[in-house]
Length: 253
Image (cartoon, rainbow, N blue to C red; front, side):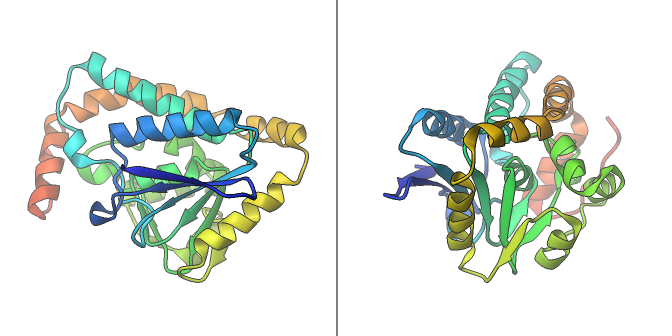
């Protein structure tokens, strides 16, 4: 399984991205499985809160590049419908949802972490947008969730430069809500999630919905345009350069 779920007696559900040998890529099958797990958790009265984490010392290295080949626009857009459903469930989740980030959160992994309303990270965690390195724009809602946390100017700069942000800076910028020692992130995120679960669920839902109100526009934008970028010559070159561990030679087409 590429994701594991474990429900404790305290009502905490831990969802783990579980492909550690590849740093837990978030491909189409993972997105489908995660969406299904969140749907089940939302309607399960025994689940009070959810923590999302990654196996093997990393959160996620991002989208599965082996899953990003050329397809028809219709096929790509159908896949982005799955992304839209998953991200919408996350940003509007009716129970506390906390990302526990150890190691890398890169590209789609960065976006996945920020789709969680709360982020706890190891002091050794690292964040990077990465999308433009392979001639893509951010997806999975990052065009909305990142500027909501750090402001549009800083978000645009991080997206376009692909600068790696360490944990201490991420907390200072607002990307991360709390830091924990390495290896303690899941425990800290679990405590935080259950503390939040003790509050008013109805009031919390209205607050979460308000702060998620702009994400749908980003999801619609990426669903319309990212398929064309995925089929571009530059994206093909980006994938080849990534596989061959060399700088890409983009031509703007």
